Length: 467
Image 1 (tube, rainbow, N blue to C red):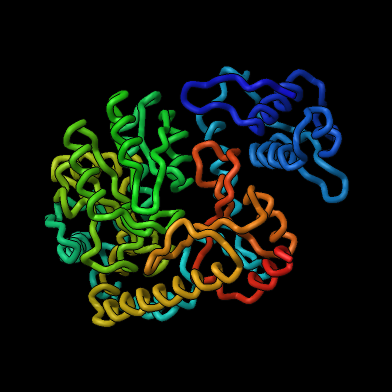
Image 2: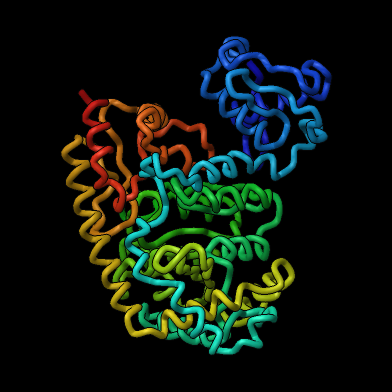
């Protein structure tokens, strides 16, 4: 079995070691182009590891274009495999591939599968926002402007709308403090590009948002996990890491945390801000489920008024992921710098999408739509808690409304084992290891989408497994 080699920024997982070993063997001619690799069973026996580890390694190699699967025949070295670098030249993209692969698995769409690990609300919750009926209204807002790039900050009337929406959360901001982005993920990407250099220490909630972890790995950051508790981040761990060395950023989700569904308590929100002031840290607060939570819910940006907080929002969950409209809000000088980075990387965000969202928000029924979303989520969360309790599951916390619940099923100390068992019944879950910095850690927790747990296939499958 290959030995693990330490790496300051991101220790190699067993799967990654196997990927690099097989790449080296291909490069050295052990496996010629077009040749068949040993079977999964033989590879697992040779390297003294689980077959699932070999499957993951082969999947990574397939994603990298090094090998190709052939149904019923196994895995073969590509006839024209891409050039493979030495291990010590492994790129940051290679180090991030574990997250890329997991992300691809999460985004698959197959109507035959019940995707309980999905990150979005059920489609029928959003279908009343008929995007098709807004096109003519968007065109009437300025046809000529739709053929240009638009402002580096984004469509000004929409930013003005956001000024009022932030005010509803108690956050005072001007339009010049808001930068529109291609979804919340672009906002996070822009922040990382501005602040993070290879080797920088960055603090994150753990478990946490795996796409954020992937972006940080890609940047070469040293990712430090702050344990997430039922009432928010572990304050002792946070202060300990702030004391050890200067981190440039702390990424956190105060409300409707992904994946645990937990909310940070008002007491902890105050303490986090005090620690940020004491140790000169910047907080990046991701609030992508803002429309699903009460306006008065405690947000760090409300306490801080954007002094040292960068507030990230999105409409992908409440309107449509297809529009890809998000934003960040921060102090004025930083907003200008981030808008410049956005311009250099992407030129601009989509003014057409931004105009569409502006029209939607201008319609009087959007607030009613958001209220219905909150009502639906509250009911779905209650139903999910009741079902999981009947199944004997342990809940990490009991939120009043959250798109996700974080639960551990009895008899399954490793949620990957549960995920594999449910997959055989076309039920796809999100095992807890996905949401850790090291994706090979064992976790008994899984993330469940409360809007989908009501499907009777899940209860039937679990009852069968728990007998």
